[in-house]
Image (tube, rainbow, N blue to C red):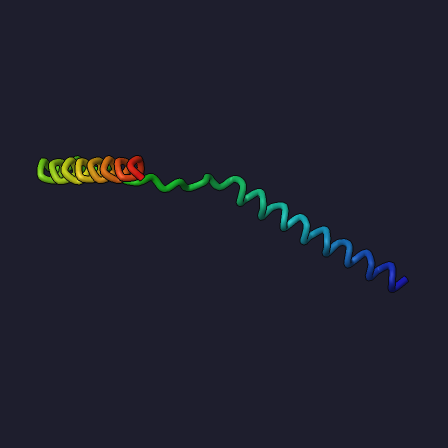
Length: 73
């Protein structure tokens, strides 16, 4: 008799924990996902645009020179 009473109590406690776990999961699923959005980029100043253009030109020339030496060897 005592064993069956303990078994019933343990099953009830397990049921309560399962129910609590289910409620907690439901709460988590109902929360919307927060997505971080980066701020809009600021336009470059004319000086920065010139510097970027010069750097891109130097990189392009360097790549051309490197591909030219690769073809020669």
